[in-house]
Image (cartoon, rainbow, N blue to C red; front, side):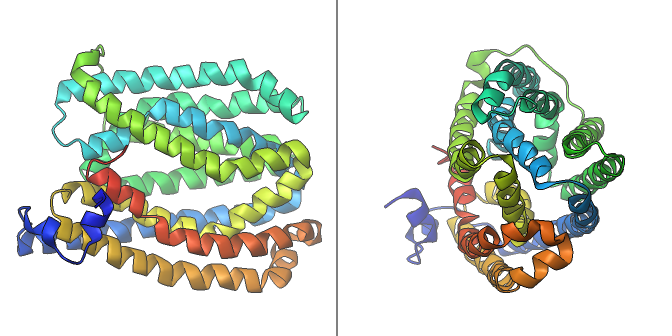
Length: 377
């Protein structure tokens, strides 16, 4: 029997051999989870309303080609981001016995990897642009990947806030990031900066969020000693490999479309992907951002893990399936109304991607459960 089958088995044998969380403690955790989900939802929806209001204006100021070149640039960014973070935030959440000295060493590792990721981006920017046959892409990749440095610096601070379940604070910081990013993008698009509007909007928003997190939860640095943090680095490496594999699965379509069809076609496809994933991201990201800390806290109580997995997966499906199917059904009317007739070509991919993302939503929590019980590999 696999680790996950042991958790979700209805026999309860796996859970029976483990110390159960007292009922009062379980209720307290449930109330805490509900409160933090509410905070996260409030922050997400405030930021999302502002972001989408800005986007609906920006898409009328920019061209599909502008969105296409940015979509090409962000193919590379997640891989280097995973190198920079190296799973450090989730490692801190899941490995509950890390000492302050070990966390300080991980803080240094995160900072060094963030700088390393940016250096790698500078080195591969020109070959990457040559691959897509878009010379301007080299500068876009370089500027986009500047965000890796502050993201590496914030990895430990964000992990500690998640471990301490300070999701209200993180929700506010995410809302501020979205507001800043939307404002910068809108102003630059209005003054005809083209694709640089999207690049600098995301970059400034990321820098602001990182600065707020580090200022709120600062932590010291220490010289890394491999023997001391070997277990944490091993766990982080497994998380990074898993995330890179999943990101490749998600982004190879962008790589293929950009190389074969060009930046305009990728612009249509990329925005269709964004629209199709709105219900999925707003619901599942809400859950998958908050819930891992609770799964880690209950990692020895398989009955609680089964309950979280079953209940939350059902809730996600009940929200995402009607939303994604609904968008697919009204795509022909929705796209011209919201975006204008120059985006008509994104309707066919939007209809297909909406149906796909609905089914993908029900798997959102399964990897988090495996990681929570120590089975990141």
